[in-house]
Image 1 (cartoon, rainbow, N blue to C red):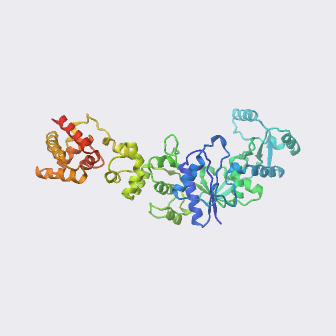
Image 2 (image 1 turned 90 degrees about the horizontal axis):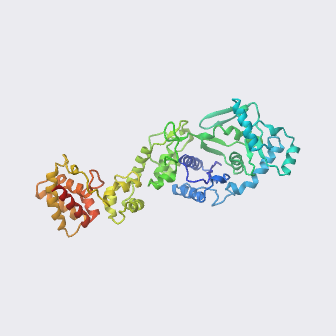
Image 3 (image 1 turned 45 degrees about the horizontal axis):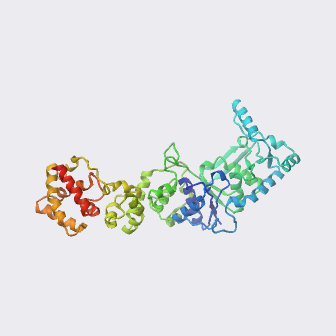
Length: 480
C-alpha cells in the first residue's frame, strides 16, 4: 500500500512550499488508495513555537486534507511526534556503531572550529576528517561510560559513488569522497533531522517521499543509511522550488511565504490550494479550476516539472476573485464581516455592500481601502472631479444638479435604494437630463473621489439620510 507523510516542524505558520508538498503527498496517497500520515518533527526545540502544532491541524483541516494517522488520532505506528519517539533513535545509531557503520566522536566545538579555520586558510573545503573513526571501540565506549560528551557520526565511504533514482529528476549520483560524515545523534542525545527522518520513515512504512528539491543533495546520504541497515529505500519524488521570481524565494519579510498570511488577507482556502497545486504541476490539459476531489483524480507525477515554479500573486488574485464571484451574497457577507468591522461599515446595509463589492473584490482585505470614503470624506477634494465629458457635467451643471437633487432627497419618506433611484431618475427625466448627468455630481459629492464601488444611489443608501444630505449640502456650498 502507498504510504506518504507530511512531517512539518512546529515552528510557525506553514510555508506555501511546504503546503504544496503536503498537498501533493495527500493527492498521491488518495489517488493510489493509500494512507496519508501526519508526523510532527519537533526535535529542534530552539525553534519550537507553542501552538504551532494546532496551527498545522487547523490549516490542513481548513483545506480538507484529513490524515489517516497522526498525533491527534493515533495509528499503528504511534507516537507520531518525534520528541515522543526519542528513546528509539539512539539504539539504531548504536547498532551502526557496533557494525562499524558509525562511530563516537568526541571532538569539541572549539576543536572543530579551529580545524575548519585551518582548512579554509589553506584554501580547502572543510569536512570532518574522520579523526575519531580511528578510535578503538573499547576506548570509545570507556570514554562514553566516563560521561564524556560525544556525538555519533555516520561512517561514510571515502570512495565510490552514492546514487538514487528520482521520479522527477532521474538518476542522481555523488562521489563519496565529497560526502561529510553526518552527525546522527547530537551531544544532547537527540537525533539530527536527517537521521530521525530516515528512522521514522522506515518504521512507519513510508513508501513514497515527496519533498522539495533542496533535499536532492542530501538524499544519497539518506540512502547510504538505508543500505547500512539493510532496508528498502522509499521512492523519491523531488519537487521544484516555489520562487517569488527567477532569483528570489518566497520570504517572510515580504509577506508572501505563508498560507496564513493569505488567509488573514481574505483569500479563500480553496483558491489558495487550487493555485498552489498548479505551481510546478500541470494536469495535461488547459483546466485551471479544480476541487480537491478533482485534483485527486487528475494528479500524476508525470505532470511535475523540473523547473522552479514562480509564485505570481496577480494570478492568485485573479483566481481568488473568480472564487469570490461564485459565492452567494450571504456567503460573501459572512466572509467579509471581519473586514467590514475593520472598515467601520459593519452597521451598513449588507445587501448593498455585497452588491457593490462582490464584483470588484479580489481578496477581502481590499475592502477597507475601497470603502474608506463611507466613513469619512476629504473636505477639500478637487472640484475638478465634477467635470466629466462622458456624463456632460462641469462645475455649473453639477451645481444645478445638486441644487435640485437636495430638496428632492430631503422630501423622501424612505431613504432606501428604490426610493433614491426613483427620485433621482425622475428628476433627471423631468429636467431632460441624461441619467449620468444627474448621478455623476451626486456621487462625487457623496464620495469625494472619481472611482468608487457602487454608484450614487448605493452610496447614498449606505450613508443614510443625515450623512448623505450633509455631504451634498457641503458640495453645493463649495460649488456656489
